[in-house]
Image (tube, rainbow, N blue to C red; front, top):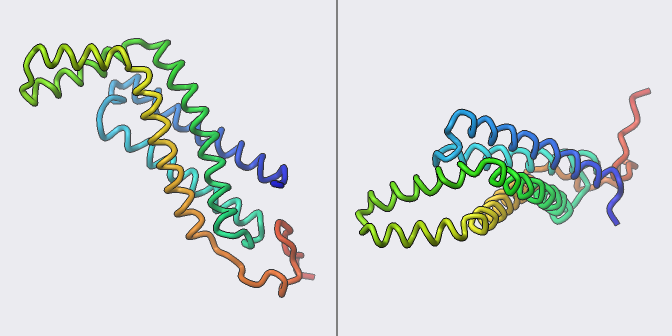
Length: 181
């Protein structure tokens, strides 16, 4: 069973990372750049870095004795919490600011016109997208957050230092080494 310190670590990192992601999203919305393709990568990079930092911090709290699986699991748990928080934010944000949907539909129209689709095809595509907009937004959010978090967890678990022989030092996982006397 996981100790409460590790659980608190997952939750505190997840909340901190989520607040940063939400702030970036709100800033992007205020400046009118949140619908730009490149802007979406900012949140993904921040999420990846945040999960990676959590995994490394977890490894340190375990005196670098945690297995790859435990380290990955730590990052994955943090990712799940972030995904849930961001999902709630997304739904509330779209409901509070319906222009997010209309701007996304405008962009979709421009892309379809660029592909030289007929007006009928464009109207059908936009009607379908409009009808299922929230579903698409939720599925996209879950997918991208989970994939990015899993990648961050894998990288974090792979690069976190591991002490191969903790029994030789006399330490138990999670303890700080005694200060030099």
